[in-house]
Length: 146
Ligand SMILES: Nc1nc2c(c(=O)[nH]1)N=C([C@H](O)[C@H](O)COP(=O)(O)OP(=O)(O)OP(=O)(O)O)CN2
Ligand SMILES: [Zn+2]
Image (cartoon, rainbow, N blue to C red):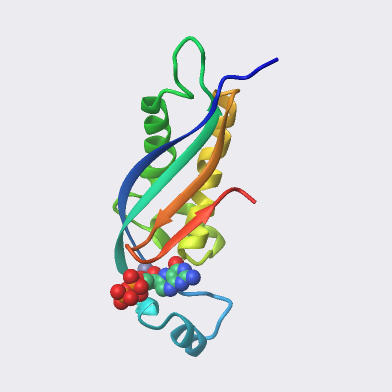
């Protein structure tokens, strides 16, 4: 059976959040030494940019891998509603209750966990392929669920 072309579809969104880098597994002096200004108890904020890429074959009838409006809606419900204008360490249960350090690495894994199941459950032929998260213009992480 021949498939239609496989295409990677990306939606970019932005959100603003504050945080403090602090690990309960480190001493206060190690926290300061490792995280430096980012360990300041007052916290600080970022305007994050997130790019969500899904992969799938073009549907012959619709001409789409998936309707990007539906992807937008999923990102809104499962990611932005939880993160935008929030303090990651205080307002987001995942970070607060598990004492997970709100690094960009851990944040991108959280975003993946939030999106992978709804996409899998709602779209048989589409896979979450890659997430890119920009904490600043210079600090960027990429995750493919591995
Ligand atoms: N591996 C990681 N290292 C750091 C992370 C991270 O998430 N993963 N995060 C931070 C801080 O959150 C910090 O806010 C980074 O911002 P900053 O250093 O101000 O950003 P820039 O590098 O873009 O700033 P410049 O001063 O222009 O270099 C630190 N480390
Ligand atoms: Zn930061």
